[in-house]
Image 1 (cartoon, rainbow, N blue to C red):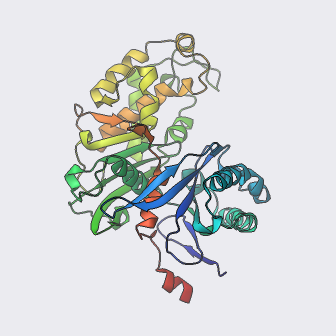
Image 2 (image 1 turned 90 degrees about the vertical axis):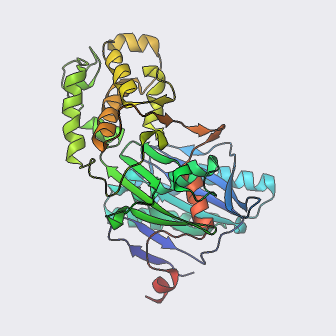
Length: 394
């Protein structure tokens, strides 16, 4: 079976294409993220109107840690790393009587792998592909470091699929997404407005419906990568929090806002290449959700709501929040993350009173960009590259 390798010039994206581009009965998609990898199994089907759907099949174990990027220096160990995920899927397929030959396999890595050297990515993916092909009968379709733009697109598809707004084709009925991950921030939405930077534009065909999506990713503005740059800034941590440099946090809200705003402005986040919808048309994911409980926010909050909650939270001491939320390993991060989110939303130019919706699920179904990726592929779309025929002929 011939392996074809391409490098996209707009981002460090490695795409391995195998076999044909037609969808099988099921899709396995590995979300190879910054802090861990999760595997998902989807049944590829159609709704009553003939639109493509990806129905998640629950797995008993679908996560391993750490992130796959940790194996960039030791690719020979990536097989053992991914084995528990493959075994979880294989067990489920046996239970439901599905042949592995009827399953397409994708591993799509995100921001954690975007900062790894291309040569190391190639070696890691070669090893992983060989392992999957040797130990399973899956149709290996794509092993990639996807650009943040596509991570945003896949999240947009997943959210609107779960909200049943994909089939309408109505841009105004669709919801945009904001996703604050560990290494990057993504924004994506459907638009009828001009998009002046072609790198922010993705065409998505869904049945007979054709969407034009704006999607942009800001690498370095994820909650972890941003916070690392302020690890010794007392204002960015609660009172008496012990900093690496021996100082203690002060929780000075106004100083923290000012200091973090410089980082956000340096990423030119206020220069969108198209007109943004109102904030009330967005579902916010990941980091936006994590701050809700400690800051006592409702699922619908505005910039002003968040500012008020963060200012109140900044008055607490480190020992006080530890007593309120014991055994939470991420407790130290929530204050900084809220400061970061305020700056992100303000600098992007959103109205301070409009309320976004922060959510991790819709009607009890988890929001995962992997579902959007499954729909993207089974609907016949491809990642930006040459056509399969053009690559095969090269």
